[in-house]
Image (cartoon, rainbow, N blue to C red):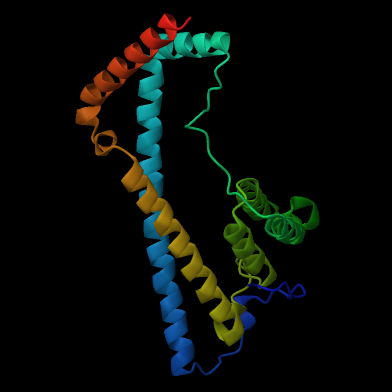
Length: 227
């Protein structure tokens, strides 16, 4: 678990001394670069799948708006509770986890909120604060913890690269990246296993939408028979 430390001084890269890099230090740094590359690739795959799912969902809702509206109205009349299966579900946290998440978010916000930054860092700070807040609202403890580490160690802003010469920060960076990559791989695996392969092939959409139409017609007929 990452422990919060006092705010470091930002050091321009040009002022950093040349430090001897041990073989272990070098291996860790290279591993970090590999983890970053794998994480970026995994996130790209997730974004592609989510974009395709969103596009299919838009086509589904546009084609079957009348069915969806009629089914929702009948369910409301019959007193049936309807859940939105397309809504994003935030992570479920225990009370201690929620308290820790809140504390990390507040601490991280002090480093990137535009009100606390000099003018030349405000734009970057706004972008970071937006991502930090999105992670907090999704209750993504690891993402908030990673942002806190990046901010407190000076890595979030381009003026500081001193983590590359600090073995402790290198080790923490590696551990957080490994955890994040594991988490995102699980997200990717869940998307691939729980989404119809036809959604990722637009040439199959008409056939898939026809199947959904049959299901919606059957559901609507069943609701009408119970009305």
